Length: 456
Ligand code: UD1
Ligand code: MG
Image 1 (cartoon, protein in one colour):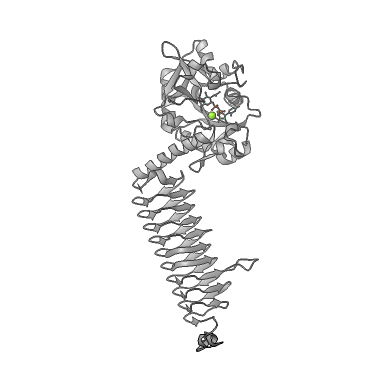
Image 2 (tube, rainbow, N blue to C red):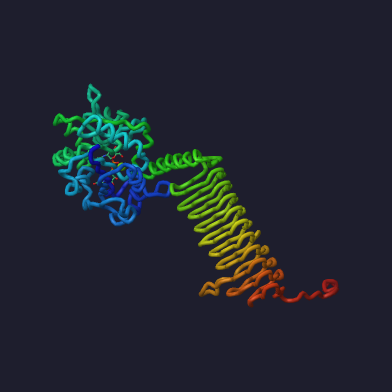
């Protein structure tokens, strides 16, 4: 096997995206497009991966970190000009150079590997990855001669009516003999409708020199989508989503309605977990086995243990243990930690609060900046008064305490072990362990009051 190099083109602004975000950083299922491309290259042992950056150079470098080397293309004069920028790094080296665009996030490692294999087997100077589609608008068309050999690639904007009927497109991915590539690049001009130096022009220049040029046709067009605008972005997202969901289903996850389930690339899900319709799982979310999530539930950067149920709820940046019941309509955020066998019921918001094993807040509560022990019952409508308008304060509720309904716990405050707080209390002082605390005004009954009123 020869030396292998990869050049990732990622310097374009992406004008057609009409966005403040640079094109190759637009996420597909939660991951920037260019990261998908680098991920697809990862299993292939590349000697070097060089990304050409320009617009948003710093941002792209921050995203890819040390997974690539970087070369700056100061002015974006076309894809051939972009590849020219790596001349210093690669020219003169023997081996195969893969050129791939940062806006083709769906290409799989399998297809790229097959492209390399075809290229190396035929001994061609260039092998272009092509695909067939009934909707080729916008793509470069592959023009073959009578012997069915690729002769040249014509850009959509430069193509004649007849050429536009061709349904074989250039995916923007190629394997080149490295030395032949740099020799040819110097001959590429910009005499075309966009006045750009087109990389695909290398194909006919090589042909003209009598060098072998080959093509490898990808099995599925949808894998080769080039994302130039938001319509293509949505199409790519849909393909990637399906791919991710099918992966999880094959690993033993039930997804009741894949058309209405959204799982980002970085999520892990255990076996026999069921995702119900309207579920969105994002970021670094991990779900264990035998859970039921959904319907209409959003988890982001959440960790969930085994056998838990989360319905019609939102969980951000929080952790849920085993056999926990959440929802309907609960909101966990900002490092909530819910221990095993807990129950967080409807209209309960939990923020930066730890719940010990077996504790419950079943209805209508706000629990913020609290440390709650084991087997605590937080009654309906109870809240931690954690904010004094200036600072946040902590509430501690120890094991086995019972907080009656509609209690205000004015932090900083502590309720001791197995203490009982009477319903309707506003607790401003610590409650000792095992104590009963009643902090509400006494009830006054005025006998016959309404009868007297009537006579007035
Ligand atoms: C390109 C191909 C087209 C192919 C399509 C596949 C050319 C001229 N055309 O068109 O044949 O069908 O991809 O998706 O190559 N870039 C740079 N520097 C530049 C210009 C572009 O780094 O000066 C990068 C872009 O960031 C992008 C990639 O190269 O990631 C492709 O550029 P883009 O403008 O998207 O080309 P297409 O019009 O899609
Ligand atoms: Mg493109």
